[in-house]
Length: 482
Ligand code: ARG
Image 1: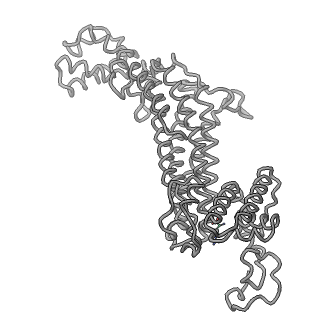
Image 2 (image 1 turned 180 degrees about the vertical axis):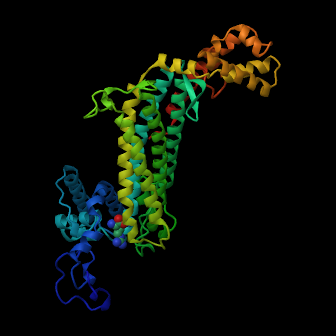
Image 3 (image 1 turned 120 degrees about the vertical axis):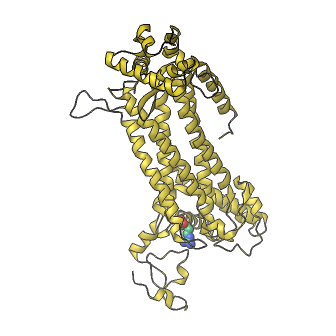
């Protein structure tokens, strides 16, 4: 690793540059790169994933250079043909990636020169790997966000279908994981819908801010060539051109935003996963996860484990971790580009992969969910979830709410003693609690009625859930195309 001569003198190399010294920048070096350092600094092992974006960016750049009189038409044609051939090799998996060539950019450029000769060396005019990689990542994320949104839409559609099917299915709603008030299962599914819908919005929002062209920023200060950045932007489908060259090559806030949106989505997924795991337990038995989403135990023959939601819940940790990696990576970096930024890719790529896999898993799982209506209803009936409505009834009979609250508390105590539901108390027992209680109380205590009474926008009444489903479908129809 000791290479003192690197910084010592400015005399041209006296011996040929050999070994692992990168051809693209080896001119300034006397000695080859240390083998470990070559490995340590290389990113090709992971950034080769960006080849399609890199090639698209290069084709647009060459086209712009030609339109600006910097390359000849014939040169551009050769470069574009060469890049297309390289793309075909990469697509076919036959491209030979070399660690000695450090990254995806230099691998492709070197292959281009090998393929079309000296003309290939002109491609990098008015460009640096710094603006090149910033462009590649933005192009990549743009595509990924579009594809993730397609997956999200599928999941959202599945949630609305399920909500509509179970619009009138009564279940206990929980606070503190204690049965609180009855709700409908459809209403619960629509809560999940809203969470994921906002995640989709956040991804769209990230896409809007990242769709800005860095190319032309050069290494940091721009270029002395008469380039036309608007043209490159148009060719690559960017909405605008980055205003400041230093910022364009150095910031990765768009990647952080993406990971933040992804982390929130995964946090939402972990909550959904947790509920699925609970509901699928023998103790709850609210839902049945299809066999396809579960596995057995090698020891305990009775087990059917909810592995898929458990793994989704677990994977939320890595995406939150990637967000922490990226945000810490950026912290304290001076302008402009620093090699630190090469560390942006692995967290980003793994975030994309994890989101895709989890969206696939939930997108498949939700439509296959079997809902145990009888069991949920029983849990709602047994949990005194109609106690609030009883108190509200007493208020309507003219009793102040605080008094009503304590009367209902006494009724619950009595029902617990008798091991029965509130509605199973006799009218005489009710009258002892308060003389204003009449037969009408039994209608109020009916769980169906309790749910139906929440009949306003955002409420859990089946009628409202169906209306909310219709609005949700309309929102999905009106969404921006992916
Ligand atoms: N592989 C590098 C990265 O991912 C590309 C940019 C390298 N630029 C540089 N000046 N070394 O960030």
